[in-house]
Amino acid sequence: MRKALLCPSAACRPNALLLGIVNGDGTIWPLQQPVRIDREFVEIANRGRRPEKRFRFASPCVQSACQQWSGSRCGVIDLCAADVRSENHPLAREWQCPIRSDCRWFHQNGRAACEVCPEVITDASESWAQGDRLNAGDLMSH
Image (cartoon, rainbow, N blue to C red):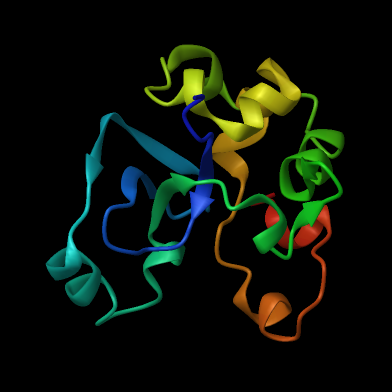
């Protein structure tokens, strides 16, 4: 049985993997190794701004249970990869992503997903709260 692919833009929930920290410019500064978070981390992280505005998490991809799922693919990375800037993020080239082999985005879009990954914003909660599908402008830090 194949292991579930990971969504690299998941919510802050117990057992998620902490992948990185959001910089002031909205890009992600990745950790060298992900850290599995527990209920205490989630509780503390929720005391300030939404944790997804400050951190990047990964959890198993829920596919069609996610409102951003598009048929047989993740709509988030398709939108973002199509909107990637010409000067790709330097961290994408330098960082050896610890979840790449299990990453939904990498399996779906290859290195193009890695190039844009540090710029994807997980928390676009105003659009999600309205049940809207997101566009690349809602999802990118630029």
